[in-house]
Amino acid sequence: MPQLLTVEVLEQVRLITLQRPEALNALNTQLLSELAEQLGIAEADSATRVVVITGSRKAFAAGADINEMAERDLVGILNDPRLAAWQRITAFSKPLVAAVNGYALGGGCELAMHADILIAGSDARFGQPEINLGIMPGAGGTQRLLRAVGKSMAMQMVLTGEPIDARQAQQAGLVSEVTEPELTVERALAIAQRIAAKAPLAVRLAKEALLKAQDTDLASGLRFERHAFTLLAGTQDRAEGIAAFQQKRQPRFTGA
Ligand code: CAA
Image 1 (cartoon, rainbow, N blue to C red):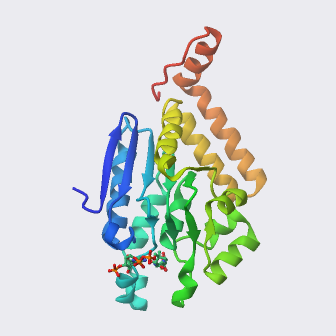
Image 2 (tube, rainbow, N blue to C red):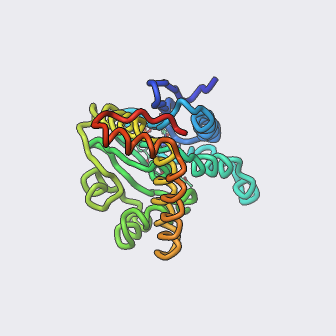
Image 3 (tube, rainbow, N blue to C red):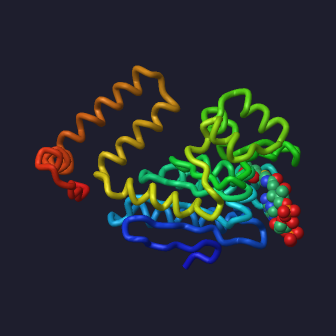
């Protein structure tokens, strides 16, 4: 049983809530490993279509656990078990929606950027303050942030350590919607439920194709898209989607 997070199964959507309030959900090894494990369970469960991850009103997550980091030397960091957990989180193939309130700093901002869709409460703060500790981001904070907000904003955030607010994050493209803080999770769940009603294989391949756009050249990305599009022609859900449109009824997607 996880101890530092809770999981609620809401039909086809799982809501994972980080629960380490005494440290503002700082991502120690245990919390990160529990999260990776729960995403593994969600991945294997065919009834789960989408996962929403959230924290508390005060903090989504305030970074890696600095006290734990203090105990690791160079060799400790080289052999850091957290890397495997991050890789498992990155590999999650179903849509991941983050509902962010309060602080999303350091590893917390990096975790939010692992999500496919970010919904932020108006009080959210996104930042990479590692520079204040004499270090730099190490879980994607330079690579994903630059791709999300562009060079100038990423440089400013990483080199000054100063966070941006929810509106700036939305203007920069890091966040798709800003809500009242008390509605963030509700909105994220509503988006997740919408996605959960779609054809799972189409959702999965569309996510993969969109992520490819970030790390491949246009010609390769377009080739991948065409292959994925063609593959879907072999699915029952494509036939169902088109038949439902023609018969003027709602489709019933099964994932086949
Ligand atoms: N690690 C460990 N403990 C943390 C923590 C963290 N990242 N962030 C907060 N906490 C703890 C505080 O130590 C404090 O504990 P105590 O009550 O035992 O003193 C508790 O959470 C509450 O925090 P504050 O009293 O500091 O709350 P605040 O409202 O005054 O300030 C804050 C909030 C601005 C987020 C401040 O806590 C802060 O600056 N935290 C550190 C943020 C940070 O530097 N994150 C980056 C970490 S490095 C990293 O993330 C690297 C990586 O991934 C590769």
